[in-house]
Image 1 (spheres, helix red, strand yellow):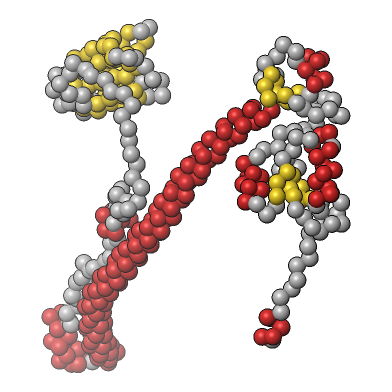
Image 2 (cartoon, helix red, strand yellow):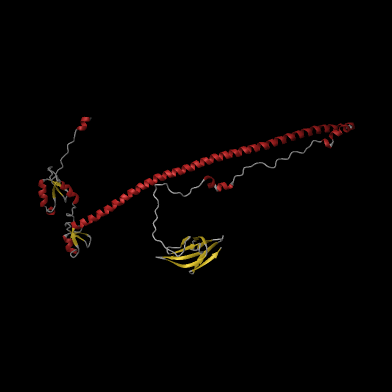
Length: 377
């Protein structure tokens, strides 16, 4: 195996690209980008369309450099006159022209050499390429930021979910403990009630048995029809000897579980809730730029309500003023109302709802016929 790997394969010489037979390649045409032998070089330079072509030695370093920096501008067929080659560039019409094109319709136009215009366009394309390259570099930087953002946010998200799971398990454990304690208390209460029932049943049974015995003896006396027996046993069955039939009263109260309805509605107070927080350090932060600012004659502005891109309401609580302003290069007050505004918002009808200081009412500021009306509700 080692021997077979050490064998080198021979390279087949490349033939001339014109005659395709001679492998002794010595020359290269810069414009045609064609390799050729000595014989074909001479023939190539005799052809009318390639008389001015640059032929370089393939072994020279200039050959490669020349090819890298030379743009082929001849041998471009005319799109209109197929058999003609373009020879100039018409700046007026912004396209290549051949001699026949010039004669037909470009005589007085601004004509320039193809090489010159091509070099100009090449420079412009290189500038565009440079911009593409710069933009691509920015994209790579942003892509790196996105990957960093993604990694850190996924970690942040996983930690948030873990905290929710931990809180869930903690509360479940505590709820189970609390529910177990409630069941044990309820079981104790059950034993108390069951003890009362047992004693009650035993007491009733004893009274019933005593009554049945007395009743049986009493029936025997009644059935005997002997006055002596009646007189002798009467004291035993007088009313005072009747067993006491009053029983201990049933308990009026016990314990029952009453779910707290508010817990379901305010579970966030018990469990926790999602709240806004800053992203972990290292993540891109939103940067805000001030485009334009305006100065008022007020010492402060508490609330701003935008009506449209030219109109707004601003309030100053300390001076009890509410102003309607027009916004352009500067701001202009078009309406001023003396009122202490705590907060305000816009309705669907473009009216303004106001919350005023020292009042539980909601006031409506409506504009009709270009006049403002303040109504209290």
